[in-house]
Length: 329
Image (tube, rainbow, N blue to C red; front, top):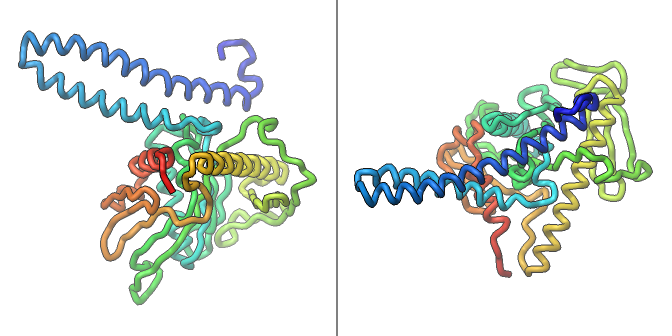
């Protein structure tokens, strides 16, 4: 990175800088844990000589145990794309305006989670609903093992609450779909045959007529062999939207390969596959009581608003342990 001209190729340089950040995020906590373990040996001798040091020793031991638990979780992130940035798409599903509002709540939740970790968040595409919330949005989250942590969020998220859009104050159930894919920086890793892709262009649109292009700058790609559809309309230029859409398509194809690999491993060990987009994975309740519970792992929390503020590490950690634990038929 200190070589002259390193930053002349911005994209390649950024990828190298990100790789260094990921390596440091892996190596430095391990080095710190090893040093802390060595210090514990010295602290034991102190306690033997002076029992008054015992509370300090116990506190350090508990701190180190918690640190080791986090290192064990990171060791579970060994997939081929777990180090990659995460491309996270949210789409409103059933539930009318409540579903659009719910989709925007989830967008904020993941953005808050990423920022609390010091990760970068880039808005790739956003389609606002005219009444409230969003129809869809796609963000790119860059940070150490972003995809590895977030890949388990793929699926349907269900919200039950008293609808703020219903004058009668009735309980409403709404759904939003989350789709997480790895960013593929090297185009040679996932090669897309353009003869397999149908491209459609259309005019970009926004809420209330805002950001409406007079030209057909928005791009939609349909990958015919798999049926995967991606679109991008956030950029003013059709060329930029096309490039971004192909990036999204490569990401979706990479995730498809990951799911096939996991399914093969599951079959090999006679376990039930734990992948797949479209399944309901988590329930969020604001009525009659406040709680959030994962339908796969059974992990739950009672502070609904804390979860929606981005405090989702408990769910992410529980999924990592659940997805790698042996399971019999």
